[in-house]
Image (cartoon, rainbow, N blue to C red; front, side, top):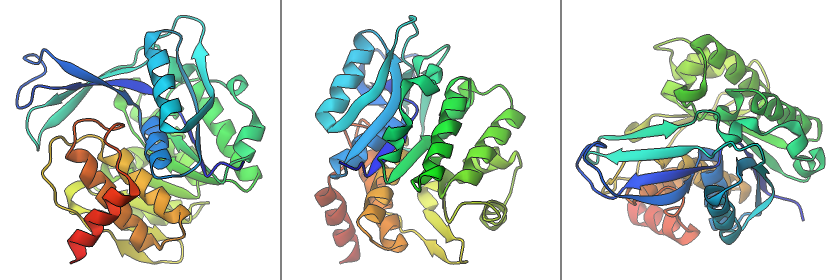
Amino acid sequence: MKKNLITFGRAAVDLNATEYNQTMEETMTFSKYVGGSPANVAIGTAKLGLNVGMIAKVSDDQHGNFVLDYMVKAGVDTQYITRDTEGRKIGLTFTEIKSPQESSILMYRDNVADLYLDVNDFDDEYIQSAETLLVSGTSLSRSPSREAALHAIETAKQNNVEVIVELDYRPYTWKSDVETSIYMTMAARRADVVIGTRDEFDVLENKDNQSDEESVKNLFQYDPKLIVVKHGVKGSKAFTKEGEVIEGDVYKTKVLKTFGAGDSFASGFIYALKKNKSIQEALKYGSAAASIVVSRHSSSDAMPTVEDIETLIQKHEE
């Protein structure tokens, strides 16, 4: 059966502070969840009812078991989530919730399994079986994951599979700003859809204070047809190659933490496009999903249902 979406890249373990309004140094207890942007998007879109698979590499230990078991229960096809057999560990992310406005993350990503995903860990036919491939920018930060990601993108392009690049910038594994810009740009130019925050587009271009219009103008000289620039609490903007600019709504909520919004936004946005909704509607679904997740403790567990999203949108429009 054809997959609606295959995500590619980082699967990790999140350890979210269960003690609020204090620093990491003071925090003694954490709750464990599946993490990593493309893993969260796979879980989020599967929960919304899409047929989803993931290409990833996890540690061959209890943490790897935890991620695989969770993904299976979430309805994600895991046949190409492989185990690292050379002793590498999964990435760990500790989160700190100082206040609803101030959260931070501390990542342990030295020699992690997901960056050793290589072209021999998946079949081109699997990518060909999908409608859409989503590649995380983090997977471009080191070899052999970098070459595997670029190969996956090219395989998709040659087989009329839509490519989404989610910039997902994490500074911990990149060697320099120039290197980051080179490989993020390479991937983004081949994508059909590019999604990222304003800061992430600055990283991609290795320039500060670029406008959204300048950023999209540069990328529209290449393959992208749709670009989404997220501005946090200020909302989001979608730009089409034809020159249309669509502004996304913001749904106010009681914020618990500031992380997780991007993955839930992508999940809601992709789901809506898959259901042939307009870009305006897709932005609403993305924003509503993000609003729900930042009000909850986790990222993966907190992914909303279609009913959750549509109830929030309806309530906002009454």
